[in-house]
Length: 75
Image 1 (cartoon, rainbow, N blue to C red):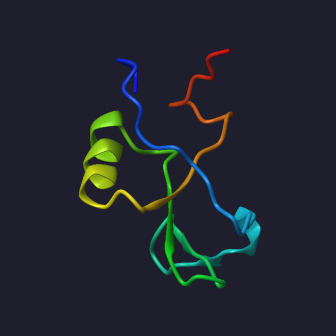
Image 2: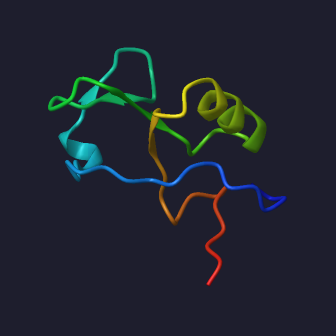
């Protein structure tokens, strides 16, 4: 988060690409055809919304891109 709080460690043994996931009608999110789990696109989410989702369901799958406007990469 902007305040430095860790949201989630991302790790997927399947290493599925976004284009390999099934679109969901009327939703920016997709579904993995291998494990049948929803993958949430975080590009439009605020820190608060994302934290609430992950706190409620820690195993939630997420798409995070380094080029998102709401992501800063720290080195």
